[in-house]
Image (cartoon, rainbow, N blue to C red; front, top):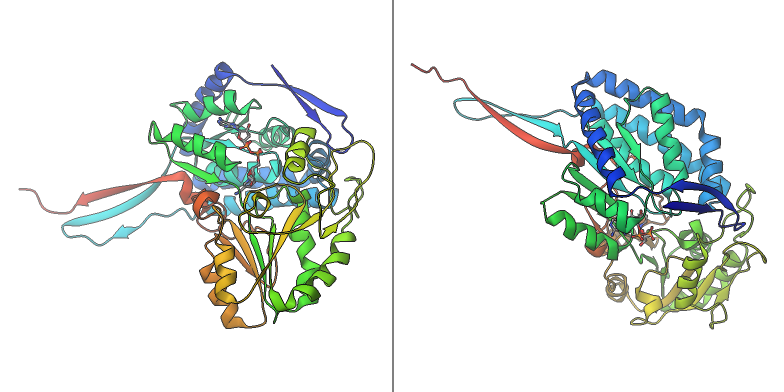
Length: 454
Ligand code: NAD
């Protein structure tokens, strides 16, 4: 079985890689278990040093990794460069955590009580195609730093950057088989990894539907799981906001990565008496968002990942469906789909389900309560933005929106230094931030008696 990697902007085949089956997955996990024992036994400073060397190797190959991401995922090169830098920074940050993974000494009667943060063993990381390189690193870097081995199952369409990262890890001196990448089909290699008794934790990033399946399989052996799933995040614009700024920032918040972003602010909620003014400002901003050749540094939006995914987006919104605003895309080869802004009607599919394309709905609201009710009106809870000049309202609304990542007067990008994850059906657990390593440890409590025994 093989996987064909296709450049979504040109429809040309970029590479063909072998797809792992259950046997290859089993062998990888067995090798990983062996490598993990040696890794966990290394002095913390040595583990940290090796991870920093890995970060340096990524830094030295940043342009190569970025170009690979352009070819396999169609990301605009400016974005892809940022993604490669994100992997480098995350490795550095995780390396800093190795020697700070301290336990506690807890006051107890009759002795001393200590806690340890032991590595779990082998962590399976299942990555999606929308941000193949950073998501691989979000799960892997802190897991490695905490003393685990990692087996990554990248998405079928985008295995190349993850495979290159594994080569760079080896070149940097990480032990063989500690960080393995195993391309394969989700239902085959993905399921084999999730069900493998030698895998101690699964980090899954992908659709909510598959995430539920993964969680159910993990439940069979009480295997811990982190889930980073879908979203339908609100961008709430109050009439007291800096409207030109809010309108100028809105396009990137749902068009970045062609809307194939779990945090896309794809529901624009606008206070009714600012609606017309906001829409007048939004139209030119959407229409001038530059879609085109991903290799051009000025390009802001590339194609969708595949023909099949474009069909899925078209199923939600045919390209000739009535729209409030529609952008333009190149003609000819490539899985292009134009920026589209629709009139949103609560209860309709386009207003509640994740389209995962460059499509946003705009819904007017009356007051703060109405805005919060609409914002919380889907099954998801990943991200959200609030635009207002009233700091009290900004805080009230940020606290009331049931989502993991809120941003006031901006559409803050995910930062590796701050925690990231979803409420409700957007996920379970948190990645990144100062506590990222703890998600890859078991806490062990040891009590030592200091009583004299006759
Ligand atoms: P997907 O669920 O189809 O696939 C994700 C990964 O799971 C792929 O590697 C796939 O091969 C694998 N997989 C598929 N079936 C499997 C199975 N039965 N067992 C184990 N693994 C299996 O998702 P996708 O289409 O690649 O990615 C898009 C989705 O990911 C969107 O819903 C998006 O919102 C979500 N996403 C979430 C985050 C986040 O951090 N919350 C980040 C990126 C993407």
